[in-house]
Image 1 (tube, rainbow, N blue to C red):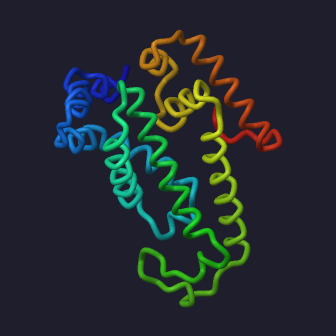
Image 2 (cartoon, rainbow, N blue to C red; image 1 turned 45 degrees about the vertical axis):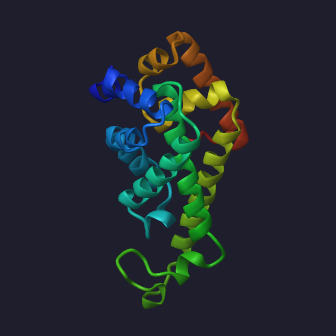
Image 3 (cartoon, rainbow, N blue to C red; image 1 turned 180 degrees about the vertical axis):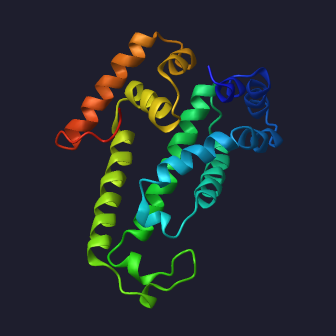
Length: 206
């Protein structure tokens, strides 16, 4: 298991969750700090699939929004274990990106706002092909993340760990306390389900 995964399973990290259950609000910020590197990697990975959003938002922006959302989630839901926290983090980053996609993906929205470098959209001539391509990709991945939310829980948890958190199948099996063969079976079933949703076009889950 990777050093990062070991950190998430450490006694210290487990103690954060125990302290949260005991009402220790300071533990919430410590949880976010302990998981920061993993959250940043996940935000960076997912943002690459949203070029229309990435034009105006940096990885740090997505991370900050996801951290705020995760803090709010931890105020009302205390995960039972590391797996629960990782899934909560994956869900909240999904929500952040879907909110941003809706914000920037409305009719003409991408061409009406200044980008993150301060250039107004009217300062250059937009390439219609570029806009169409980015919009199509935005629609695809928006639909993908929404469909992941609709998967049965046992399949969704495997997608959360393998695709969003990029764990190995061995790591996912250990965290879920199930066999690697079960992880593989659920992974294949999730892939098939998502591919069916996209008319057989693989959503890059392999």
